[in-house]
Amino acid sequence: MAAATLALVGEYSASVVAHRAILRALELACSAHKPLIGWEWVSTAKIRDASRDLARFSALWVVPASPYANTQGALDAIRWARETATPFLGTCGGFQHALIEYARNVVGLERADHAETSSSDTLVIAPLSCALVEKADNVHFMRGSRLHVLYGGESANEGYHCNYGVNEQYRGAFEAAGLRFTAHDDAGEIRAFELPPSKHPFFLGTLFQPERAALRDQVPPVVAGFLQAIAARRG
Image (tube, rainbow, N blue to C red; front, top):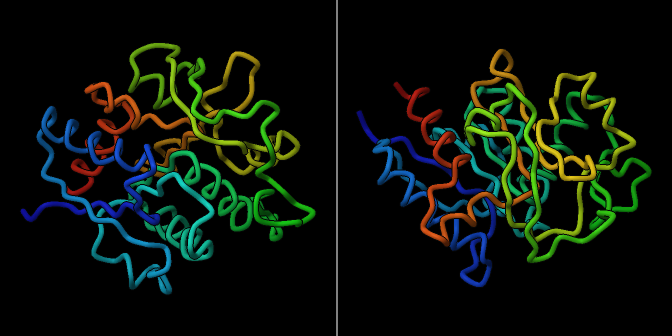
């Protein structure tokens, strides 16, 4: 069987710590778990018709460092992954934009947007109460969640590079539409979401950047689980 190919959706820059970490994380996870998986960077500027432009990929990781060159391209890519049951991971900016896509197309908030780039009256992504730029913080996982299983425990300390997160005003609407918020910080603020396995084989987003563990030569549990889900779906 030919190798599955993962699309890394975003504009690659060697100056972005998370981008360097992603490449190392994939190398470490593949070496440790031996899935037959390759990867390729896909600029959002190249996504005009997601079903056509992404058809050859087996999974999507929408990466940090937004705003993206083509916001709509990123949103269309996320929607394609969600609607086609294609394994999806969104970290940092990918987390934020996955929530915008879900809000618009599932929750029904057509004007849902991001406070960094919009003055919409429906900002589901808003400034954090405390900025998390190049900081680490505790993350607590909901029992029974995918994250809880992947980490094999109830908490971890993870790195961030962000100023924006979930607008708590819309938490109830997201949850009513089937999304599960499965990780929180010490103060209870949202740090990750998942769709349950009954709705999607792997659809997960983290505001933190789990890939950064690879810079310490550790296999990030989220990345290992993501690649295993890709391999399982191919199998």
